[in-house]
Image (cartoon, rainbow, N blue to C red):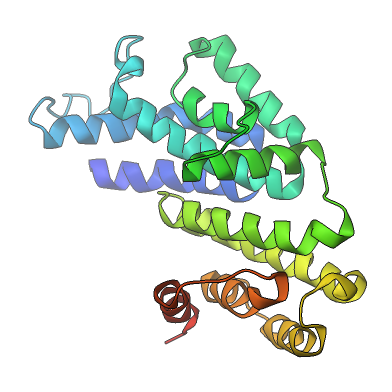
Length: 250
């Protein structure tokens, strides 16, 4: 099996674990993903050759502490925490953390990514800060009161959308995010239209957005674009154009 075939095989297993927020499958396939990505990176840098037996080498404790391995781990752990948060499944994140701490120690690859979902960040600055703190509230079931709910959902959707587009697991985050977006805005249509801005204009737009039956990236982009005025959010012309381009389907 070629290295790229092995990469696809291992990523597929992790993809399924992330999209379903399945902690057992994520734990079982995480190390394999770290190993194959580290090996291919080393090959490209001229630092490794294909073993005689064709088996991807395991990572030593020292290799597990390398920056590149941690970057890959942070990306995967963040993706898993995001999909778990959209399900409100704190137990899945707890199980994942406990397993990795036991097997690799507290400074496991991905621990920094997890910190954003665990720590208290009073003044978020980075995208990871915003995503982690929004997801933390979702994992704890900390639902904002109805007057603030739609705006917070819109902000969370925007941050998750931006984070997903930077991840190796973009599609695995986007599908749950589209489902989550539809569920949140359906709830607003049914129970929270009194708290929207410009109600007479916003409600028809909301219905139009939800009429799109497809749960994908264009649906999310269109919801963010069209519903910004409903929650009193202003987007720059440049960002509106960016969302409009992503909302188009070819």
